[in-house]
Length: 344
Ligand code: SD4
Image 1 (cartoon, rainbow, N blue to C red):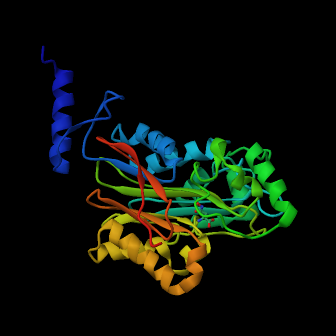
Image 2 (image 1 turned 135 degrees about the vertical axis):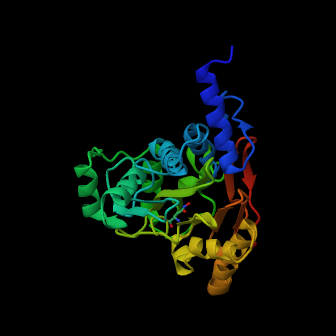
Image 3 (image 1 turned 90 degrees about the vertical axis):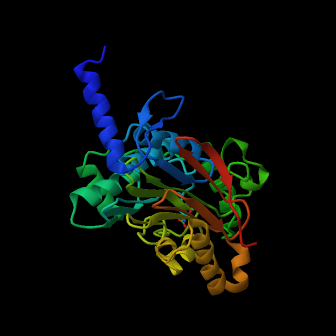
């Protein structure tokens, strides 16, 4: 029988789909629900698969991209076996310091840097965005703000991986980047080969951008930064326009790799501006990589930077300096890892 409730549901649904001018699609087959529009989420490295699933809990129910990108990277921040968050590699004094930022479809943004003993820096960044007149809080001030917002002060507890690696690193205390250390097959997590036990310098991050069923974009980026960095060092990840940038008219981009060289060219802002000029997401990422190559010359051989971008049409692209960068993608129809093209 066609009752009033069903009628309301179906008319809301069809007017939503008409309003967006998009087909109503069957949602994630496993989840057994319907979504409108064509939501999509992409995030950096292997850890992106689990993070995208977290984001899909929101995107798959017609939720807002902003909520999705926060929820998604919280999965990674909470995973002690992983690269991001409190179990990650410490600075050279043995202390884990975290950086994160978030940006929504209205160009609202919030960021924290050099933050200690807080489990979810991305959520603190969101509170900075929503509850303060500022964009960025750092160090003790960021921690005090987090506590005032009810975030608990955690004990620092390095993961076994991080403890072992730090002890190894202390033997030589060498600053030597390991390219693609974020990739579990290359070096991190339970599959870490011996190379990772050398205690080499490395960096750990997840960047995520998403478009929701309304066609709105948001992004998030969270990291423990470079392992064994100088105390007080902040990379690109919490810097709007470097590690993350969103322009709801054009697209969104995030970055991973050696933050100093992303900051040098305002990397993700450059990617979004290149998309605005008409370049595809992949072309835009490639052109941004070219800028780093131009600035760094031969020295670019020793570093990794990868860009990942999504445009307003839902097209995705990425490019990196070195082979080995990968990203995770989830949409109504796909869930996969993608290997990225590279300069070298
Ligand atoms: C940083 N860009 O702190 C970050 C590190 C990173 O994958 O992306 N690692 O420089």
